Image 1 (cartoon, rainbow, N blue to C red):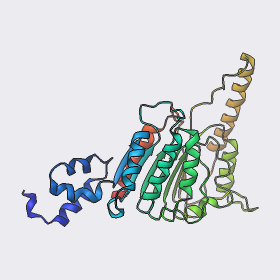
Image 2 (image 1 turned 135 degrees about the vertical axis):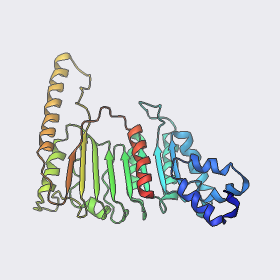
Image 3 (image 1 turned 60 degrees about the horizontal axis):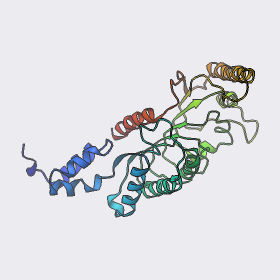
Image 4 (image 1 turned 180 degrees about the vertical axis):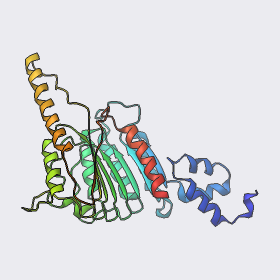
Length: 305
């Protein structure tokens, strides 16, 4: 079939539907001909997978120098480290990377629909995530965060967010208190909290939220629209490796006791009517790059459909 018989509007629509991967499809289309380079230009940044300092800084510069109607980012996977950086460490360039990340988020906030952010650097992760939670994302529907995160609480910043995955705080005690999550994400239907370890107080907080008690302004409660809660612990805790063998043995025993108590609380949870609860198997590893990258790809397909 001769593609030339179809109008440019149809070619444009085909490009829009095809370009929901990590950016490879639109780059390939732009190389077909001058015509398809122009047709695909509005979708060049539609769906992107960005990993590591070089790609982060390059994207920030590209978006900064692109006119607004051609920098519509709808699906974004953003990681401070690449797949091969198994144990990323803080670098001298962290400040520049943080500034670039914040610029990317600012320039794409108005169009983003799915966002997955993986931070392997404690020195930049919390700052970036805190700024992210204070940024307005009017169209964002799915968000996954990996890093030592503060709690989202800024009212009205993510009015359409339906799915939230938080990873990186081993005991996120306070997440469900004072109604901050409900104010920040009034449309939230799915909440997943992973990476838990020795999180006894969070497990108790979740039990209180399921029970629906409202005895004080700081009582734990679920967001009003929430329908699914998934929690996932990491592998059994390890010792710090400091001190004598006897000290490490006591630390190991204490950590395992706290972790088992967390598991006991989680296994005994009874969700309220209308809310589904899943206690997921322990993650085999605390490395989340591949998991978050795969789930982001799945989410893009689901939002597209």
